[in-house]
Amino acid sequence: MAISETPSFPARDPRWWRMEELLLEMRTIWFGAVPRPFHSGTLLVEPEGELVGLVDGTPEEADALVAEARRRQAYVVVTPFTQPHDLSSRLRAAGYRLVQRQGTYIYEPGDQPAPLRPARRGLIRLLRRPLPIRIEVVGEDRLPLWNRICYTAFGPRGQTEEESLREKERAFANMGPAGTWYLAYAGDEPAATAILYQGREASELLAVGTVPRFRGRGLATALVRRAIADFSRRGQGFLFLDTRPGSGPERLYAKLGFRPAYVRSIYGL
Image (cartoon, rainbow, N blue to C red; front, side, top):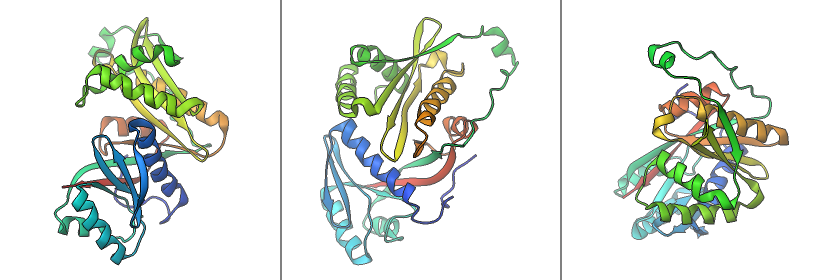
């Protein structure tokens, strides 16, 4: 189920705005960003740069925002409900270019994940023995192990493993009891990670990753199903996640009950 640029909910659906608010909240938790008002939006000052989001203003306010964002060399987030609607055109006219697109997907209580299907009986799968999968919730004392698996799953991304661990330790402390950090085992081997962050209205699923040698063995599916079950027990709000449109993870999440909401575009110089 490919996500499109066309909103799947009425314009200015309050759930959308809450997703974007939680996006900035998560960056504050994760990177230690400092949010501040910025013309008709919000500016996050992060260690590696600056980002402007939640833009909701008039065309005149947008001109001032774009000029100041350009001066600061800040990235700017644009969504289908950003005001003014032509902000992306104004950014391109100022020399900005599209650097990233993120699909946002929503799951709500009452949505039903697809039933488990028998494994495909291709040759490779026949040669693989079924994996016993076990999922644990980790505490602070096991963050080094959790981080090592996540670091292996996602790659360095410009960080050393030690830098990645410091980032995770900060995020773990900032999330507190609202964050559930999952570690999935393939047999006795730690092999995949995920985080469920439960806010007051919106909850987010993030850091779903599997180490290369265990990909395609059902670990990500098991983690997402566990997170959905834990979220559903609360019985309120909605759950969402971000991933690259048209990717394998997008297809997985669609099978598990997530519906496409909108595309978030990030512009940079």
